Length: 90
Image (cartoon, rainbow, N blue to C red; front, side, top):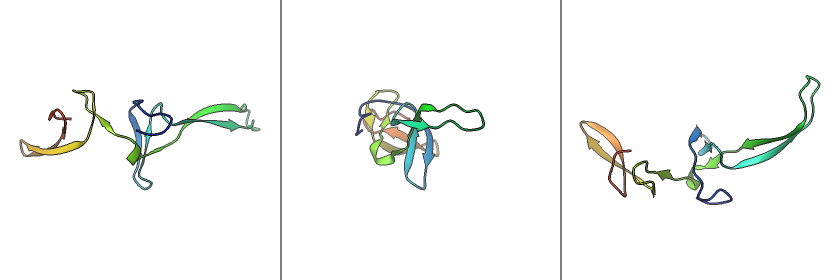
């Protein structure tokens, strides 16, 4: 929602509960410069993704394709997530 990757979408690969961050594929990519090692690895510049704060990401509803908040509803004895905009089950 903010920063250089504003408006882009991706899937969450990893959730870091302790730091309240998520790793989103294809977003928040930085360049890392590495030196060559004795084991035969070459040096160079590699692209590495860094975690984003949970406060800076939002859920996109698969049905209406809009950024939405999550609501809860009891359906068939189970608690399910629903889209606050189109009221469909996520």
